[in-house]
Image (cartoon, rainbow, N blue to C red; front, side, top):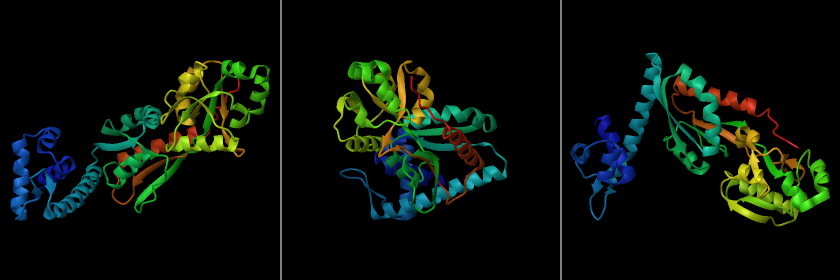
Length: 320
């Protein structure tokens, strides 16, 4: 069985649609069909049920397991061979959510591309749960997630104790607290308890988003229910709403690295507290440590670790 046919077979099992898979692989439908027919002839049995729709037979499922092992071994061999021959080309399949890659990649890619100009990055933007699944299924090489990867053979490196901050403009505080504005700011200088801000309208990050769960716990600790101005599973509007003094909002270290200077001058950035302790939204870098890792991936990982070592030292608190 040739590697090319196994690759096409594996891709077809993802879509179970001959036309769609052929288009994705830039093949004619007939060419793809010929590869499948060749494999079925070699196996001596059909690999797919054709009606009422395409589905794997028992033989097809067995071949898929075999193909995944063979193709993974081929990838390991190619990576090893590239280093042996001192080749500097390859692909890194990198996964992260928008906020994380938006901050991380611009910071490290200039140095990475200078050393490895012929290595390309395949970026996957998804949630932590999906990224972890893709990593375990070896669809990704490196991921940034908010949960540690505990599966055997995988390495998870803690990158960042991602501080959670409360963003509130003086204009908003003055509207709701008047002369008590300075008292609240002074009290919150080393950390904000939501109990002191419950009269404000809030931009709420909704659970089961991990950040949303942390914020929800802070409101419960404060003994109050937030006045909801707007709610979302994402925090992409936090800076804009805080700047326009429409609501108190939440953010974390990562987006604030880029957005802090764009906030209105009267926006305070208070560290958020839960039971008198700072709230953190941890970040991990995970990769499969169970097979050969090309040097360019190791360098990519090293750059990310170095970048977050410096980020960890930042305190973005701002009391205006």
